[in-house]
Image (cartoon, one colour):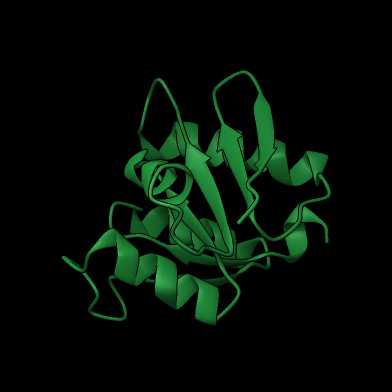
Amino acid sequence: MNFTSLKILAEENTSPKIVKFLREMGFDVLDTKEQNWCGKEDAFILKQSTAEERFVLTYDSDFGTLIIHDRKKFFGIIYLRLAQLNNSNTIHVMNKLIMLNPVVHPHEIIVISDKKVRIRRVVT
């Protein structure tokens, strides 16, 4: 599937401005804040995203730890590893990724930095 066809679950540290931007770009975004899931454990978020086949959008590296080291089930992760975590930089970087529109698959972690994108397949 192409990146632009992903369904996304935005975890609680994702700004409503980022959620709005992604929705305006045509993404199906479920926001944890809108679901009243703030404060829920990361394992709960992974379970919900897997049930709905959504990639978790996060700035939190703990999701990678749960998946790689603890072998938790997951559908996909979009990990924003940015030098500046402000909304304008996040939108800028996400817009570049949308323009690239790479092919992605379930069980991948997409690591987005300011300068590059890495896609890592995790065998479950």
